[in-house]
Length: 332
DNA sequence: TAATTATGACGAC
DNA sequence: TCGTCCTAATTAC
Image 1 (cartoon, rainbow, N blue to C red):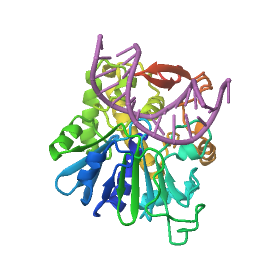
Image 2: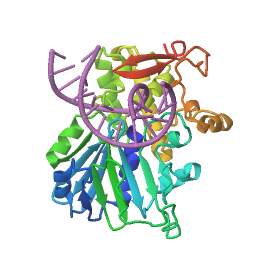
Image 3: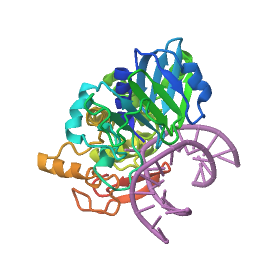
Image 4: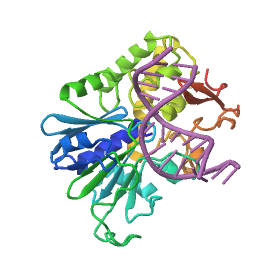
């Protein structure tokens, strides 16, 4: 799944292409038929991303809450107005998506996926038909509209120009404004939502209150929003911090540093669509790091390999029912 | 064709 | 701590 950066990117796409328009909603798969019928015909009026969740507001105080879980995805198709920041990232990643449709992949949160053949799960994809020029020139030569449904589509939102297909979400439900507020209230601070200073104080307070290992706290969405398994491993490495350290024993200044680092990585992630965690590298090393998913991180997915800095073997253990990668030598 | 994997989160013990 | 749910790509057989 998309960690926080992907959800913010998706929200931007909604803001650009869905918000302010009436949508036809359906559930091709049938499992959200009732909800879709309630949305159908309404105008989307606002989108919010908080941590790993997205809230899409419709007129009449009806909100759609979506959590993609581990392998949910939104597929966009149609003539899409691309967010400038996303478009700029395109220069680096513009390549045809693996489905080989008539769409150009303007961005692909699978950045790491499309740059590598290693078994990454499906990623959030965005297919964009950039111009009239490409319309009708695709492999199928048909430029069908709306696009044919492929696979299990829980929810399809269609405007006159844009099609957004949701598949595999762990949560897809309608909420009242009250419920949206309640959901968000339970979430820890998100650097792109909350005031940075305020967020930092909340994060520091939550972490330093608990005996729980910092490696678990970073994954706890009530402590801080948007961090997933990749960012957890990388943030801890960047902080040179042992994942087992109880929250209350992490020096306050280091806790603050982690928050600010998360804020920085999140911004980079939103801009590039990639979980770039080795941004301190020189250009040549950076280029190499980008070349494949396996070369992109300090410790994530590097079990058994030598630490890039000290050469010690990167360890793999289960923490919070997820795979935790770390360097026992660098992280104390 | 089946098994495996994945950037999550819940609820039942 | 476990099992469960959501889906599709990749790998193994």
